[in-house]
Each structure stands twice: as structure tokens, then as C-alpha cells.
Length: 128
Image (tube, rainbow, N blue to C red; front, side, top):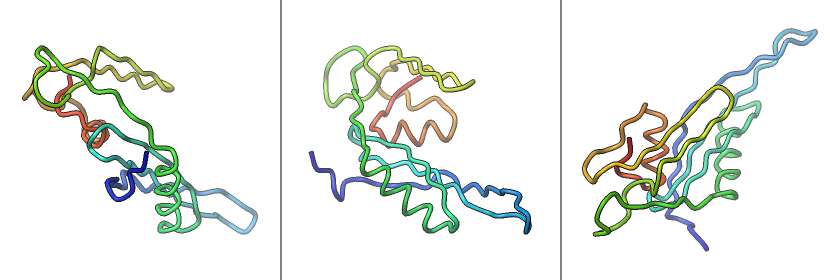
């Protein structure tokens, strides 16, 4: 499948990193970029580089090359387009635990700002 110009990207965070060397500190930049089409395709990418612009560009390219489809579902009646997660989903990475629960139409996304951006880019409208 070809998504092309449908994909929208958003820089979530630019994080400076420093490494101590004999001559002093070497600064690099980590760019976190989310890319999605608001209709069931999403990807989050991280890229590190000496310059901010290069890091952002590299993260966008990396995200576009590895876009994944996301399954969406209904809560209650199957009328209209899918709007929520199909079932309760739990994900864990490190110490962070994320639990997505289906919600009725019109509820909105009940989460913190960054996960809300990612869920919105994936095409979810309602989720607890």
C-alpha cells in the first residue's frame, strides 16, 4: 500500500544529549517524531544526530519506512466508521504500562497529552 502525501508528521520532542570527552562535552540531539494518516496507520521514530534538522529529517524517513496498520473497532452498534479500540489492550515497555479500553462514541480520548496525540494520529476518536 502507498500512503504518500496522506501521512502527517509531528515532532514530539527534541532532547539534547551530552557525552563527556577529553576535549569537553560533545552535544547531540535526539528527535522523537510521530507520523500517521488519522485513518489507521501510525509510527513513532527516534533519531540521534549532531544537528537538530538532521535528526528530525532522519526520524521522519525512519518512521515513513516502517508505518504499521492499527486495528480499530466499535463500541456497541456497528454504525459508521470504526472509532475506538476493538477490545481492551495492555502494553508495557520498561516501567510504563498503557491500558486502552473501548469507549462509546462521543467520549473522546481520556489520556495524557502525548498518548492522546498518538491515538489521534492513529485514527482513534474515543478511548478510555
